[in-house]
Amino acid sequence: MVIEKGTATDRYKYAKLLAVSVRTMEFCRRFGVTDAVYNWGFPKDYRFDNLFVTSLGGYELARVTVAGGHEAGLQSPEHMGYCPQSQFDPIIQNLASYFPCVSLLFRHRLDSFLQNDDGIRAVVTNGDSNETEEIEAEYLIGCDGYDSTVREALGIRMRGEHFIDRSINIEFTLADFFSFHNKGQAGRYVCIGEEGTWATVMPLDGVKRWRLVAYGSDKKVSGIDPKELVSRFLGCEAPFVIDSVRNWTRRAVIAERFQDGRVFIAGDAAHAHPPNGGLGMNTGVADAVDLGWKLAGVHHGWAPAALLDSYDIERRPICHRAVEEAVADLKRLTKPAVSAHLAKSTPQGESDRAQLRKQLLEEHDGVRGWDRLGIHLGYIYHPSPITVDDGTPIGEDDLFSYQPTGRPGARAPHAWLSDGRSTLDLFGKNFTLLRLGEDAPQVQPFLDAAKDRNLPLDVHHLSDPTIGELYGQPLVLVRPDGHVAWRSDTLPPDAGVILDRVRGAGTRASARAF
Image 1 (cartoon, rainbow, N blue to C red):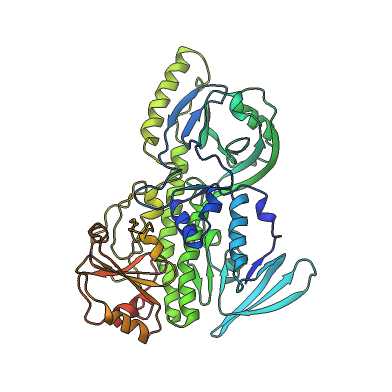
Image 2 (tube, helix red, strand yellow):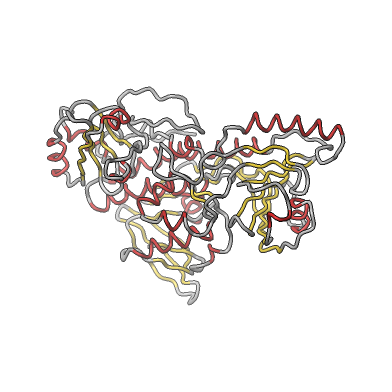
């Protein structure tokens, strides 16, 4: 049951999210909605470069080519999807509505809740009738944003930088946008003035609708004229229309814990990022996937409640990583040196632009904008109480490039199968045991142990030697979320011990502090 205080269409009003990461698209592949995300109407051949300008009518300072964006690469069967929240939310809402077991209660507000060893009792108010009702549940997950009612009731503090600056989002429409300048397409126009980076502008539909994000300060931005900001970006006379204006606060915080008994927090309720890098929603989706399979295991009886303790242990370090990278991306974007001559057609202006161009290309060349495989695919759940570490060294955490690995805790690598499917298509519903190579050991002990525990386990034999090389061992156990739980070249002495650990019935562990 989903409780949402707004209407069914309130979340469709503003673009907010723009880039759906490659990992989120892999989850969408599992859910069967990739076509809807890719094909809602954004131009297929649009260029996602980062373009630094004084204005569209002024000088181009640098263009940084962003690789990828429209095609699947070697590392994934999917690619980044460019889909504003006004388009993405209806897709996910329709998906949720498809399941008979899901109830979506719009215009309902969570007022309070109590938990005990047996479950949750929540008090909810109907916003239309103003009537209250009590709802009993096994668990409660607060996905209710930075001002989370759930987190506040639990007394969980958010740690970090609660105020970076105040910013303003301006969505505007300009038909024939590209006829008013010669700068061409860009996934992000970065506007630099004598004060440094003052705004970025991104396409909403790639044709006529755009969003300008003005970087603020410690002062209120509510008095700023949005038309002046759009005109400054354009640098020419153009008949644009302001569609919406929203003020907001940029922050970088993470909750001190993600769980309290039977209550969990996820998404912005657990971690609030600067939007730079497009990590907020995508990190939240990964929260939901991680917690989802664990709740399912407990609900269906093949996992003890202790499995749920691994949610905080695994996800909080990854969310901390995402918050740090969002802040780093913000600093990279706003770092350009200040010059009062950038927009001037003088020898000094020409010299300053050349110097800045060199700086921008050095700092941003090779950075793949939103589609950074390292940050999205390269995170490893380590240490984790529900994986079996094999001692494989973990290399440097590369946030931009991604090197596939089959080590426990990592996302199971993608490889194409002979029937046209991806290895990723084998994961998602149950645990999956891969037998890789012609001579992979038989796994009847695992099947017997899984049956004894009512643990859903699928077995696939893949003889392609390149897949065995990619995964590193002939036996690989993959969790429902697509992360490797265990691997080896031989059967363990007791397969049941392995299965107990990966289903949360092994040694308990504590969360790391940040």
